[in-house]
Amino acid sequence: MAFGINSAINKIEAGENENCRVFQYSDEGIEAVHNKGTLGSKNPDDYQKVTRFSVDGTKLATGGTDGNVALLKYPTLSPVMPVTHFKGHRILDLDFSADGKHIAAVSSQNLWIIAADTGRVVETITNPVLNKKKPFEFMTCRFGRGAFSDILYTAVNGDKKQRPFVCMWMTSKWTRIRTLSVGSKPISACTVSPDGKLIAFGSSDMAIRICSSKTLQVLMTVPKAHALPVTSLTFNSDASLLVSGSVDATCRVIVVPKTFPKNNNFVMLVLALLFLFLAALVQIYQNYKI
Image (tube, rainbow, N blue to C red; front, side, top):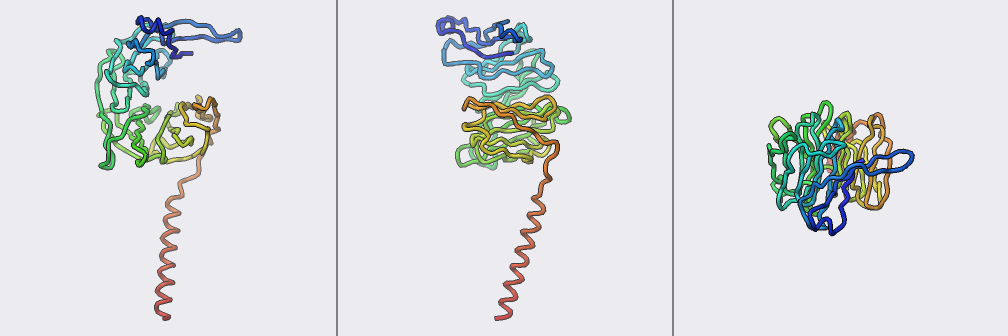
């Protein structure tokens, strides 16, 4: 297991913060194995916000509130690339591409694509302006899996009057190919199923939504999944379960259906048009009768 745990304050202020820690567990208990410092800050308020494994489990990436992104071998924690520092930014989320060649990292203002072998930033995307409104802020990023491994998903939040959006980016050219609103409240967490077919979002209204990775259509909504906003989500290996965690100190396990009801928006549209047509006929009949 890998965690972000700060050292004592005197160690942090001395530049000796071993914040990235690996533990092994067994029936006998939990034992510390390796420690590594990945933060450059001597401020006790900074911490390792994100810890992410590569798909093959051989590498570990960390992102800190001081703007540092580090890539380490797992479980030894020896560096794979030089630490990449984004001055003035807090790393909110990061993820590995399916082939492990790139790392996506986001702050509220920027999305960076980092080459995993050198640490070089190969692409920078600033916070997008959607619908000609105020700029939105990045919150999460996830590479697709399986048939959608060439897609990067980012969740962006606006102000209280704006709905959150999910953007799909084509990784070959880093161009935005689709943007769709998911829910009405800010998105707080995101995860993609191992087969890449599903993507789930947690929101500040405590709801969890499971969507199609292809269309971003909402397939299932779990309202009030927690008492406070969702902060973490993950599918199990066959995407039959979705586990969520929250700042309310609870975890929830959701059974994911094998199939989802088909979208009935078209049927509802036809019924609405039929109702309007019948209403118009009634109005015409009444006018003619008068």
